[in-house]
Length: 262
Ligand code: DGL
Image 1 (cartoon, protein in one colour):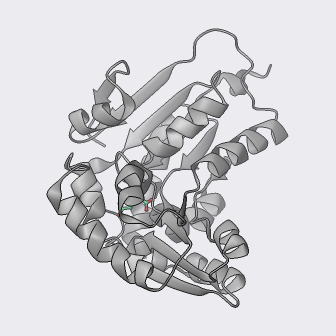
Image 2 (spheres, rainbow, N blue to C red):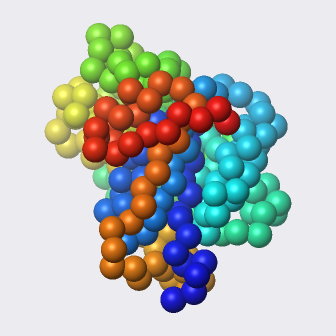
């Protein structure tokens, strides 16, 4: 096995939400060393300009490359849709991005009405507009900015009254429009599934992109001969620049977290 294969998979997000993607990667590739960066100090990315989002992505990528990562997973829809082509041009390392799973939702919808909850930055990006125009022929997409949701999750308020009020407010127009799929277009949102299931009618399917990202990561590692075949327990590192308690609640107390100013 090539020495580079032993290097870590680097994962970053605007905060704690990308751990929903990290969990899928760790489940599918349990031998891999991983490094996760939670840029919580700069969350939310979704209300920032494209150039500000790119600058933050460069900062995160530089840090992961300094730590020797062999591949970078951009575990943030907002960062992917605004910066992934720029990152691929700038760096000589494979990047995996995450985009809202519109394709399976629109292909399988029977009511031909699909809801999508994502940040303003994702829904207004060129990449999202391109993808949605390809897959939404004959489908009504009901798009909703999830303003305020990321802030509540970053503040440790997943199960709060404020969250419940916001979710009801955002979902009711989709329910009224008769959606049968809800696409979660932000890596923070899978943590809301239990609440979303309580609000939505039973026939509405909720889909996110976590597993697809993990499979794509494995495929790209395989194609580049970078799969880590070690049998010993992998090294798993988490770094955050704010509020380690919230991160720890989501990943479990048995992982240690390093606070770092980045
Ligand atoms: N997890 C990020 C995403 O997937 C949250 C964006 C934000 O920080 O606004 O879009």
